[in-house]
Length: 376
Image 1 (cartoon, rainbow, N blue to C red):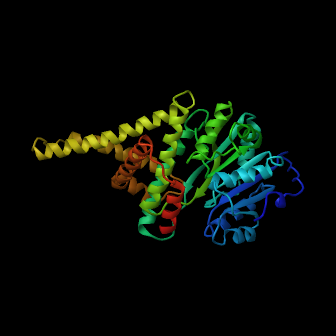
Image 2: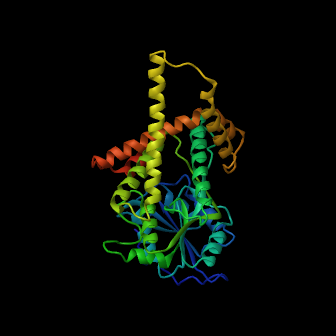
Image 3: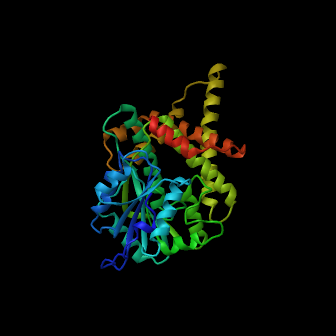
């Protein structure tokens, strides 16, 4: 195994912008996508001073293909802490060299102006600890159901991005690990906390959410970039999507229980409350409709179509905000059926995750997600 020490070299010289920027990619069995991810980093208009891939317990050609694409590679064979362990190992190796750390998932591609856009944000704001990309899902070339599921996911994240960008300060409570840029001095503050081996925790399923909370706790600012976009892979099957979202949701609920209700978590608790209301409203509507039809107590009124029309109009309008949208995205939103089925799925993993956390059940959600992705 390459050790962090074996990969050390003379510190990189800053570019004219005065900053040393290092890109760090944690990768576990990502041979299908790692080449594109690394090449997108190497081909940046403002190229990172180093591009380092942490090949975490890989059983495929991830390390080989990452090197061929132009990255330095550290092969980890004893890491037991998955993505957080890989990132912490990389941070320990690079923290005294870099000013900014660009972390990118191994299935994510950045456009050529991404690093330059992030640098502009950090130069403008000295209290900015982290800046997340606006990310969207890449549409697979084949597979009818995979393409449909991807369209629904990118519609969902277009709404998430718009919500963040419409806040006056573009603040976010989660610096999405998909692609973000982080200030090393702020990460160092978090890493100095008690019982931590680095900025990324080993006790949370959503390490990016926990890290963002710790940065905000220290009065640093965390934002979504107004300009930087990232393109990532979506889940192509319902099983892999369910596994991913159960990890996200159960991890978020567990962390919120740990953090409690305070000024830093009230937005997230509010989102959880809205999730409960949305799911209960759907369940109540279906129950009312079923009982009414069973008792022959319902008579059709055109007024009943008004809420549906409002939903259709809102979803169709939102579909116009999807990056790289096409007619299918808009038609899919206007028919409402796909969006509604996706909403029921979302309600399902929402309540299942809450039940799991409240019951005190634990499961290796990383292992489940990996297994579903390989099977998918």
